[in-house]
Length: 466
Image (cartoon, rainbow, N blue to C red; front, side, top):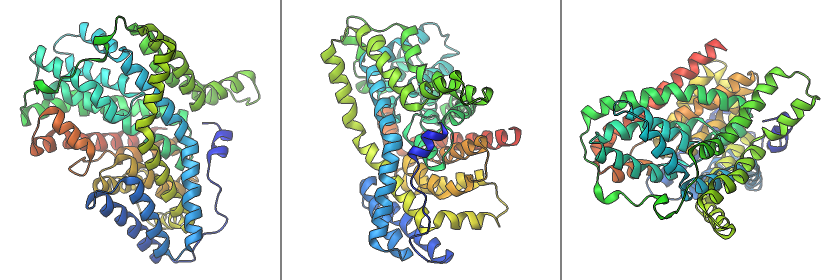
């Protein structure tokens, strides 16, 4: 993200805090706000948007901030966050819907599987999940991939764990570490990291993480959990009702276009020192997240929609249907931004910065630990990412752009730690795979923990090298 983009999207810096509370009271206020969110989500099953809103009020009240200023901080943070990432989430949803409805996802799956030996099937499933997971939300990716996983396991006489765990790992890693997913985007916006650098490092760390937590851990999970693919959970594929579907090359090119444009921009930022040059200015525009994703969506209308025989009306309907399901995500992300801004305006971020200076702990490890605590408590990777990013944002003030990006990835890694019964994804995987709760804990929950720990390890390793 360019300096201009960051300036436009950043919340107005607070010239003074909205409360004069000391560090001890601020610490209690932050814990009270987070505890309120956790209890409302886990015990009373309240929607995360409402829980974050009420938790913000508790935070401000305990910190002694005037109600009017608390509301102003919350609405400012909400508006800034939605302005920064809302359009990108919407564009990602449109691209994902075009991919699913046109049969493009089926084309990728069929092409890769047709050229894959039985021994390499787990690696192929991880690759498929990673490609499909780039533009899709985690829940959408699961719904899209589960029929494929069940069919591959049943027709190829394969263990469900051997082919299912790699697919789940590919989706989960993309969701937690790689923009344009909502969590990483919100963390980038909060911490003011460069999107291109974060994307490049995210992909670099994601690849070995998927390999370890997917195909390799899948062998272990296969020894622990024995389940047969549920036949009644295999719905018809999207392309079964289509006369034709997009080509493999066109589909992959469309999906990777925004990634390529953003990576090229990051490369130009490093190599081109003259910011007034034509090359720099061109890539500064076409490599911005908004233009990159918008370009992919417009291209997808032709390479995916029209290639599948969609009329203009059907493409319009597909776009319209893609936006409805993300309303809840936008509200949660926005409210998380409001909670984050209130933490900052109350002085909690500065408090953590002051405390961390006396702790003998890496800021990257601290960010991971905070995200882990919120993730395990709330069950939401998105809430954990946004809240933790807001708390550790001041730590990035003196960091290089590379280490700021690694701070985002440390938060993302922590947000994936040990999914259990308070996470909707836990129940989604359990039901689709036909597992019991103990089986889901031994497979899915352990896999998520492996992803989190391995990703943190690579984040710390990269921080030592660059």
